[in-house]
Image 1: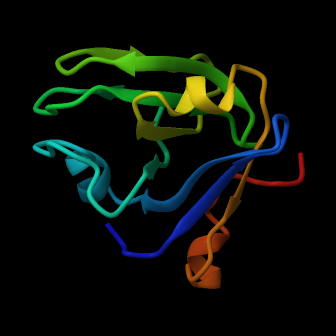
Image 2 (image 1 turned 45 degrees about the vertical axis):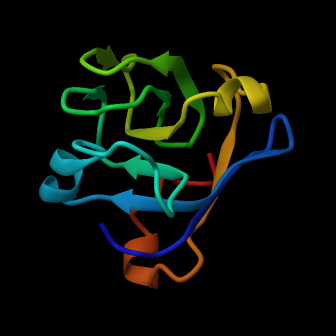
Image 3 (image 1 turned 90 degrees about the vertical axis):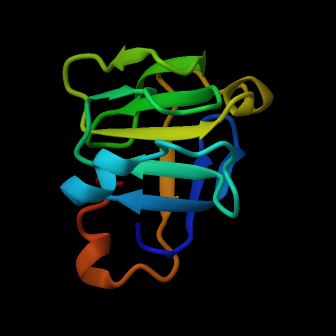
Length: 135
């Protein structure tokens, strides 16, 4: 995973979901995801793209999950997904945002909310692949 900071804001609720997120957009980064981790460490979010389903096999902590369409609108949320589980997005899911457990409840984030991404130091050619902001 690249060590670039990703800021994710819920503009519907005017809250911040993560300030030190990372983008996993290669098959290897998406495959590794959060597996074998016992804590979040320096990051507080992981955007997997493209990605319409996830599993928590080999994870040792619960996570919150947002399934997003290509306009960064939340199609489905899963709160406190326990280790050794599978979660599927709805039809039209483009990306998945994994967050520390409790983030969705703390921010009031629900299906239908609109997210916006600030890729910070992600180079422009990588930034194009972020979910579209103007939908």
